[in-house]
Amino acid sequence: MSTLATDGQAEPLVVRSREILDPGELLSLLPDSPEALAWVHGGDGIVGWGRAAVFRPEGPTRFEDADDWWAEIVASSVVRDELELPGTGLVAFGSFTFTGAPGSVLIVPEVVVGRRDGRSWITTIGRSLGAAPDLVHATPTDPVDTSFVDDEDRRAAWSATVERAVRRIQSGELDKVVLARSVDAEFATPLDVRSPLTRLSRTYPGCWTFHVDGFFGSTPEMLLRLDGGLVTSRVLAGTIRRTGDDARDLSLAASLARSSKDLEEHEYAVRSVADALAPHCTGMNVPEAPFVLHLPNVMHLATDVTGVLRDDSGALGLVASLHPSAAVGGTPTADAVRVIAEIEDLDRGRYAGPVGWIGASGDGEWGIGLRSAQLTIDRRGARMFAGCGIVADSSPADELAEADAKLIPVRGALS
Image (cartoon, rainbow, N blue to C red):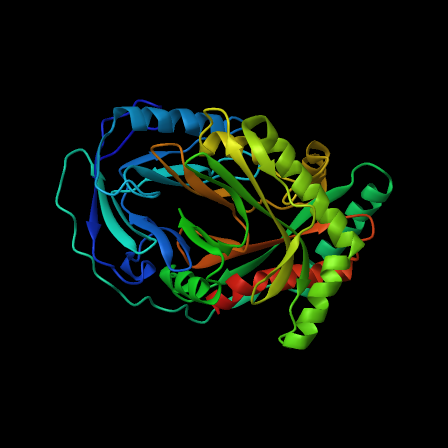
């Protein structure tokens, strides 16, 4: 296997993308391995495996360091790309921690298989130009005897944290803070991550299902897409749980669209994204009112912010400007992140951090690592995460119910 040191000294990589017949379900091509990589949306996307190069940045400059490392990789690589589509040629999958603690990673796989707009391809990456491997579909093994750790003491402690946050907001210290909570899952045998990935992609095809280095989930929120100079960011803030009754859910969607509390929370999030992108973009479009995004478990207020790139920033540079947005941190962001560190009492790891992929041109797709979980090293456990935006009139009971609803996707996929 071709390797690359993490000190920024790049060894040349040889990359070739070939067009192939439709390979079928992408996730079923993955090996049962921690090295499996995935970014799938509506059946399309890219999956990969192997390690041609790995970089693990940390600290407040992790995005900039990763961007510099990627530029060196791109400059030293030899690429033959028959398709020249987003996701072909040289690509890296990545996931970043929320705060800059150790755990961020960029991975260049040895094999990538992708599909987009009816065209499919396989990419091989290594020190020399080799034959493409045979593609084999496999049926994943479902989790065995899953148990969840979420007792009343744990739930009460999180509700008390929400109460502390509300008091600090009401005192005028800040306007909004996003608090995360966790639930642990335990398995009788090591988890085959392909099983929850497959369940998530089928149940939530409108979300981006991902797996990078043991961090997996299905996020509804696109932090940043850069495609040929067009910048897009989908902002979600303001949530209500679905009931399963279509008529009732339509009524709840209407109430969500009128909720002053949720509209206020959403406005904070949209403003933070628009302000972060403005220095890099022209022709920005920020809709005046959000729409309601319907998912199987919840409904969100959503706004798609778009713009045209006017500088030479790549996707990682834009991600550095955007993270953390008010949707996952709060408002003002610096004050909210400080309050999170003081009262949350939880190691978020890569939860609510950017996760996605980048191509040689700098284009790429980066979601926010929501509706997610982190596997333990032995794969016999996983920590699931959910978060809620807390404002001055937030109710701890309501926020706990919202967090429970946001845990449904991963919890269901692991059951």
